[in-house]
Image (tube, rainbow, N blue to C red; front, side, top):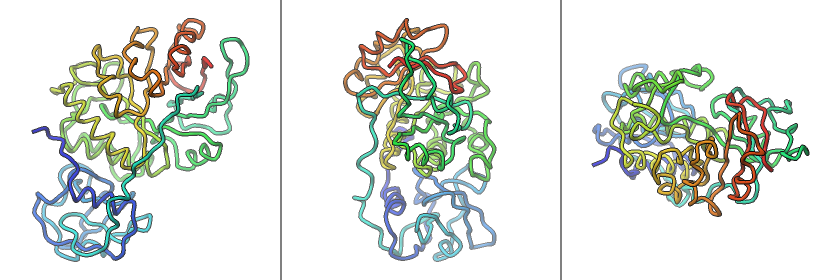
Length: 384
């Protein structure tokens, strides 16, 4: 059986508590390790005295699979009945937190409150900005993509979609873009990890990178980048990535998630140090996409056209859009034929490619094409 498990009843309760009101504080009864849900992780915990647990809640609710430092399998023994909720406070109106065990008191809303809709980019031309080098500066015309030229030299339209780093950018920035009528995509890496951010920047006690390292799920180094492949077959990897998506993307109000390094199977991006098959990748991305959709987030897949097979087509029913890099230069645009007329495709080409070389082709396919600098630091040249 594959290590990725279907969402359990307790996971559904976690989602219910996350989105619905709670009638009474929660208490937790004794449980075995088998009762600890490994599907959702939204908080860090530490014990401050025998039999009593306190928590530093970043967001929402969790049936904790994390240790006090963010890795591992959680508390070594379940807390005694009634000892959990008293020391825990959560944001968003939740009155109690369950760390382990069974729900023994409280009236959760029925599971119909799980999200059933989310933003899907339209098929009309969508001018977009892809800026990952630094936190978006709302007052900078280059960052905002409002001083760019079309291939005919005329001013380009202002972007209506911004794809920006989920950790670097704040909820305030996302809200400001929404106030302009724009949609915002949250960029995160799900197949590799780099030590790019501080714990303070991530809003955590322990960085995601340190959590991955402690969990021993880092593999070989990604070629040309100071990052390491993740063992996507390990449940702890799924938990940490879901935590990241929940805290950095959902909690900040993003509309969708761009998942980078989401095609590492069969050493597609270089030797990972793990055995990762196409079916493993499909299961991993299906789990993450389902998690995003339950949070009301769209899934924007990344570069699934560069695998040399039909993986992009396989994942098309679940994906809400695609970001592809250099599909014209690399002659892989045809691998996205299943998306043409069905899903939005955002294509980034890099120098020395020019808009005159590929825009007619992108326009004919309905792709939202543009030339960006490799640094993705603000400048761009859109096709339309």
